[in-house]
Image 1 (cartoon, each protein chain N blue to C red):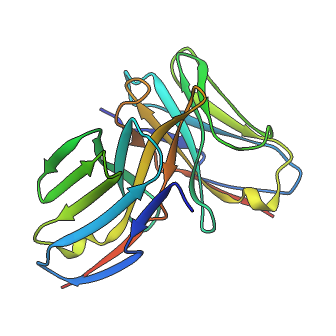
Image 2: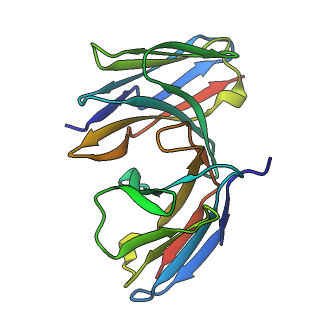
Length: 112
Length: 111
């Protein structure tokens, strides 16, 4: 069974731009969660989707948004990028909400 | 005070030693996760616990819900166990569930 895949793996953007990251869950998994990891704040929860609906949300500004498609693939979008958005963005999938999560390799975003 | 506290922050041990990493939390939880992160960023879920004890190979995780405390033990430690170990708790706030992470324990096993 293929694992969780994230694209792109690395990305460099300029302040003020927007970015879209993609996550493909393990086949059969219907829940996708997104996390941000920075050296200063560690791992932080962004949001969690199940059946195309956002079920839970972390404490991030509205510039961070996401969506889930009918095939369970998910995208997250960050608009008006700030230098502080430079981070490793991790996606994790699970069978349903609350089950064990399987993490993707992450997308490393650098904002200059 | 953080909702999730881990100790120690750093741990260096000799190969073969018994390792214990602790996690304390301050909120009611539905589950606790132990994660392993190797250099380069990849995260592996080791355990998800809501009560009692789980064992997988040389790894053992326990949780005491009343004391709001969990431990991760590694028996017969090996240099390949060197990684950052992260505790995370799933809790609910006004109908919204979220995962809150500890800051991690950096484990180094010396051959």
